[in-house]
Image (cartoon, rainbow, N blue to C red; front, side, top):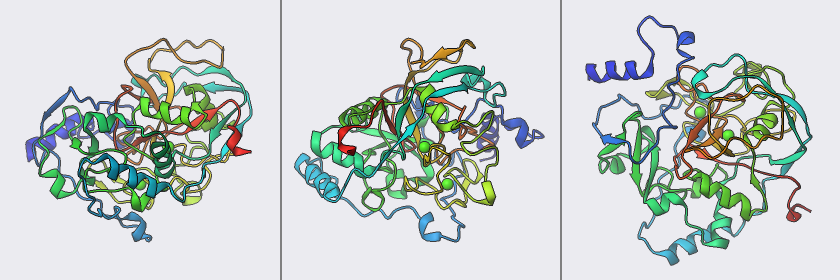
Length: 382
Ligand SMILES: [Ca+2]
Ligand SMILES: [Ca+2]
């Protein structure tokens, strides 16, 4: 165990004697940009001394993982369709879009916390007026999409997706013998998909208003197009996040907890061992939880679930002025923004507007979702 802990500390880049502040600039993170099905290793139980979430919030009922109502996991497409239809019976389009008035802003930062991610330079950027979903796409909305289109997500096609170890039941864990080489707390779980976020014995029924997760970039694109929308460019997303604030970390300013309140769902405690859930959640939260994070009225633009953007990923950017940039030519990865419930300043300090990360367009995991944008709101909002 000692060797394992030493190895883990080394991996974290948090060497003895290095303060928390010093460790922030590390390019290490929660490992959620390393979720590659081709880069697994043999899982060793006890690799990391994980504790199951020990929620200490006053609102303890919020902290508990949704109950694993044992689902019939037989691969029966008609049962799946019935299931989805049942989920969508009462679903209205409950995610309003907010108008993001055009203007210029400074994209990126000249004080990068994770330089390797390409957070800098600061660059003046013009954005035309557009519309953005007020909230992340919920399970309910995604269920309606699937019920109407019979869409199959990439995680379902692959037959697995990545889940953070401490959220997985002992029963499911017993059958897993691989882990992500560079981030062994991420496990490929057979049968994990948007309907079963922690594996076959989990279900979204108790959390239809939580963000859909285990959706790949390709899935997110398909959903937004079905909804008459599109993914935001990285520049649009960041413009919306910053909401006119100059040189601030978060959509509202620089304080992690404005008015000593939690305004986002991130990690509290010692990553990856213990999340105290002080913000109310050790997993996803409802998409309408917490105050509006900025003057555009956006909810959970930072924290909760990562959000796919339209752009391909590079880490070197020109500092020249640009208008409505649509990102680089195709690379291997797509940009995701906003961080997730797994982010913490000591380890994955990416719950900031200028922060960014990446995955291949077919990747999926239990902490990546989306919100959609459009030039004009689709007709069904009228
Ligand atoms: Ca949390
Ligand atoms: Ca988010």
